[in-house]
Length: 360
Length: 75
Image (tube, rainbow over all chains, first blue to last red; front, top):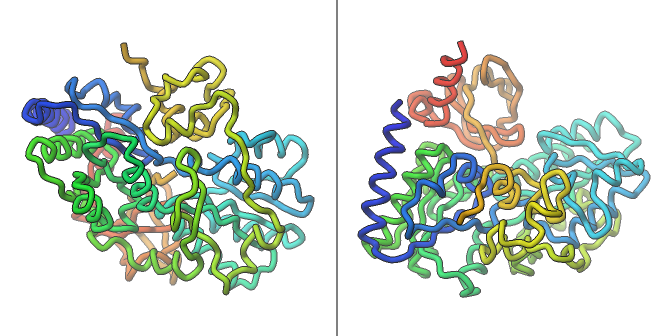
């Protein structure tokens, strides 16, 4: 009951501050888990008419470039390779294939819950080369780095990672610098911020005058964060507010960041929709190169075209809403996905398909 | 992908811990957190604890309150 009351209060506050803002307010969430929560709980239907929500590049599977998806297929085709991956990646279509299709052709593809499970798997099958597909943002990358360190501790010679980790702040900077979007505030990711710390958003508040609110994932928590953002807009403030303070500290989890820095070094990365962004990817450090799958198997991330007609790139930049894509719900669905945004349960297209309604 | 859940830490053995979640127990890795203690709550992501808080703080969490409410409704 307490939750219902919180939601009711938040709705009223939202209405009040949206009225005071007296102009359209566009807010972007940059976390796939928020995207899913927003659609699942029908939050767009609770918003005042001048408050708009758009989804940004918050889903790691979705922002993985088509070239990198093809690179993963190339790895899967090595007869000695066993691919270990989070489940989300299995159905992502590359230019001509997916891990699911490769598996049907005989490739060894295993879904793991933790990068650590991939290390255990490598130890259990010493005759195979286990390659872990290391996609993920700051939340996940410490676990990937810890698994690599564990593989070294166990002196495993048959474990590597395809480093595909990405960093959220450089993508936010690229998005804001592009000038494509008229944004009034950022709903900042909850679990990425557990690692990064809420202070990481200060540059966006200070340099870009962008209200930033770190939020949890319960419906009331999301709504309260939206209230805080709209209120900042109405009061013409731009600050970082941390509404997920139980887990998120201003300084984040230093130990986890040190783990990332031990194994990986930031470098350029290509994002689906956003293109190349400097310092936005994590690459295996020189001293750890024996754990670098790209190096061991000499597979490079090439350039690959997006599937014809797919608007995934524009969706990830917040320029196109999922239902505005001509493929949405017609030839692209979670059962038969054309683009990555329809595959991952956190992709905007998948969330819109499962829970959304097409607005009038 | 960045899903994470709170759970109570009930045992610690070096870098491994045991958590209790929804009535079942599971081994988790504690490599990424500093000085965790039995009785505290951890935030679990991909098999690792990525955050630690005191029990009193955890009981304020909306996610946990909802889980408790739903389990009571189910009974």
